[in-house]
Image 1 (cartoon, rainbow, N blue to C red):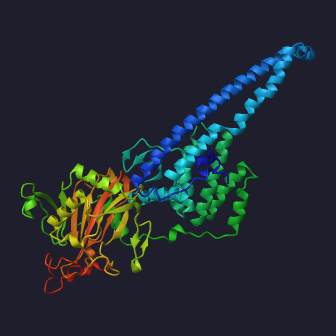
Image 2: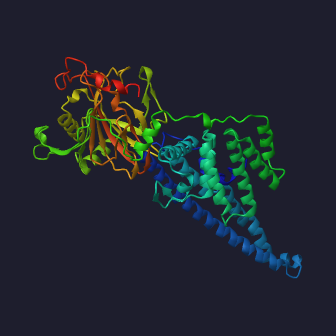
Image 3: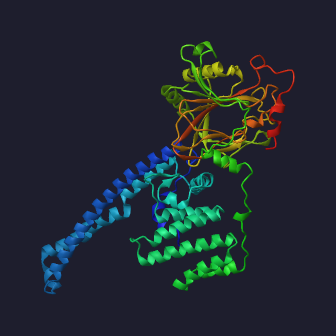
Length: 528
């Protein structure tokens, strides 16, 4: 198909033997590197074009002078008389000996182009370029936002995101590319939605040449036909291909029609079903209040200066968001300077794509968790103060704490419902399971990115400087499935968090077990 012809000019840079590096799209912080990369490309390209233009101007001046010379030579149609003049003969020989050679040399060598190639090559080594998998990752992120927040392709194309208008309207090419990528990813229904928007924008585009317009409309109809076929609509697919062939009987769409005539529609998208938790999850992510599953006691906000002597003069600002299990938000526990210091420590380390720990302790990268992370130990002054703060609030011994996991979420960044405890395959580097979670919000998020507890119907918007704390284990050290939680996809903005997990080892006297197991409290949630 010719659908990618128009984008070849914009993507030719990526063919200059550049290399790809670690993921960009899964972290806004990493995407900033791409923003700087594009700025440098813009500057070097501008310099390259200016240098080329200067050369072209010199070449054009030479050609114009030569045209005048030839016009004078042919005026009167007596070339013999012209060349019989010794100075004219000198000029002709001189041009062919020196001037044309001087013209050919920069054309052949093209030093500005070689300089440009060298700069691009250096940038590829220092930063790296995104590849097709990155583009597909971003497209999957956009589709994820549509799915969780009920966003339409037409609204997104108009720059409307979740009811708010942004200066981000898209042209038909961008919508078309999203549709193509979604088709390649098997998201046929969503692909159709974007292809329809692309078709509408193309049809109303006054700047398009009629021939180009017809060609691109044919490309859109081809993909729409294939998507309809995969969705089990062969008649609709046939009608779309027929429209293409009516306009251009020799169009390659005939081969596609012949191919589809020998296949049966797969209805692949219709076989996909959302998991049982998904409806509740999306409502919570959208900030819709659902009946909370607690003990019915009223929730309070209060100042707590008795937790530890450290808080006597500056009491904790406590917001109870759930009782039994207790989930508390401690507002304003980190200052802006402290947060900046945490980022400074994180910047010293390499961020890596977040994974999911599976059977046998293996770590796997999956779309259910889209972010990048790094781990900070408690050696620096800022991290020592963070460790003391968590110890004072939680009452736990930090000897059983994992390094703080600092994470940043990218386009559609999320972490689907999960527990923080391991239950099986406990890491050997720590004693016991994760008894508690301390989650610091290190940024505000413009839209999305809520923390939701799907079995308790609790949602929390990220508030910079706040700390959310809860226990993952009962006093009996049995796991508490009520604490299943998720990080909702980020719609607009950058979500940064810092997680500290404390293990049950070393906590025997900090949170002693009861004489009888209390795991019955969560028994009803184990299968929900």
